[in-house]
Image (cartoon, rainbow, N blue to C red; front, side, top):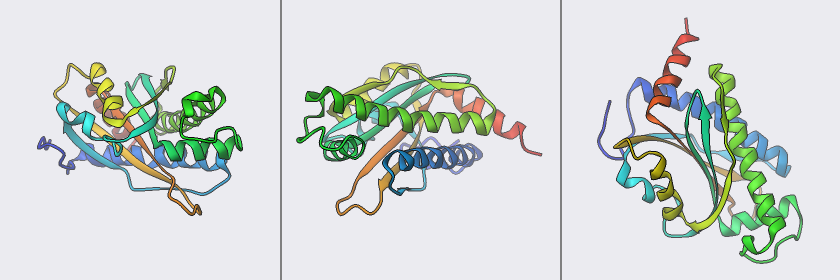
Length: 210
């Protein structure tokens, strides 16, 4: 396994995890598209092995305040997931679901807006996790989600508490964009499976192949 910091892994594990990420992100994008009644495009997922010390810097918003829905993942596959957007995108997503419910970037000042954005995150994360279960015949589920408004690096730093026993970790990252908008609307979906989860996913996928 390649362990150089930030380098994409050219191994079977990378290929298998990318297969999982491609299918799962497709489910998540479809769910978001259905909710918003707009087309949602996704980038090809990136799978990389990182050093633990790099985690706070990996968000696209590491120097920017962002809206994040975070969910621990439990079951046969454990890890943590994040759905992150800029504050501007968060407001626009909320207003697509509940028109004119929020008029500025302070989403947390509007309880209804906070609940709406958290539900958007729930749907995206839940769809991603459901797809993994369908693909692998494994049981996994998100625990109670949490909405955080903070600098991206601070949000991801909290995840280190769940990964303190490892020096390196896989990051499965995908950018999702709402199409046909005059200004870009982008969110990032991050999945960090724990060390055991990677082996479990690999065995499950290989088991179903001839």
